[in-house]
Length: 395
Ligand code: APR
Ligand code: PHB
Image (cartoon, rainbow, N blue to C red):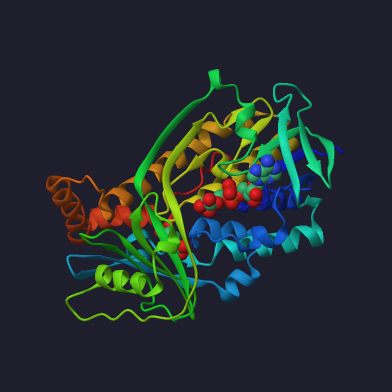
């Protein structure tokens, strides 16, 4: 098999990249190790920055999102039993976010790719990227029980944190920056209307809690738990009791309960692999970087990476100049480090580490007080939450 761009992984990064390249008249093949149902059901965060919404629309993948997605103009910060709303449009010159689950983004992009795009092979597991330093990089993969090779001009590793593409960058050329957190999130899906019409980020002495949603009738809620927690050790009523404690307010706000249809624990990690390019291999999305979910930046960063790559390759096709491809890693990393910083700040401010000292607790509360009493501090949060703009130099 032969193509211009070999894409490993059909998460949001790989799927959107295939769509952007298709629209630019550049062919690609997508290899995905899992089956379609698995990819379409994997639960992840569901907040799309304004820039992500714009990119999906421009790519012709925004129709259902515009119909079913929920535009959100703010979030609530909750601590010391008080509530504070951060209003995005008034702080950012009109920006907002869209609540539309990653599962739905993937479903839309898969349907489009199968209808209009190049090959998208499910249950096709990439085994290795070879010849990244040559003009003809290859992906060795296994499909329908047989070994095969995909010959490419470029390979983009969109295969997530556990993928194989990152391994093709020699360790001597790479630097990894990493932090794990001593807690995770117990996440539930529940068949009950969200108890608030915007997301609620709550800091409590017992730990963090988040109220989010998937639709007007499905709630998504999270509780901070110790990192090694088994979700099954939490009975449904215990989860609701604990959520109620952490969301409690002085004004009698009420959390509605409903049947829990899914529960799982997500670990929390910050991770950046530099550089994001080696020869003709480019890394995008979770393959190169992870943020903790507080702030929901993961999907949005993946979108930024693949837009940057698609623009750079289109520029190379049109002008013969590899300037933007050469700048790919540095261009992406500027934005990624801003998101790493924001996600880290949100995580430390809102969670309670098991070994936190009383001094640190007071500092985190002081940061929340600052955000909720100083417009400049609040604006900084609103700008980061609604999204850092894509670097226009990478046209
Ligand atoms: N061969 C083929 N496909 C693979 C391989 C492999 N060896 N290894 C992994 N994959 C596939 C996975 O099955 C998955 O479908 O690559 C895909 C990677 O998708 P994601 O993990 O969703 O990563 P990405 O597309 O970068 O999206 C980032 O995911 O973790 C969230 O919060 C994060 O929303 C963000 C998004
Ligand atoms: C989610 O809806 O799953 C979600 C929302 C916001 C976050 C993280 C996760 O910060």
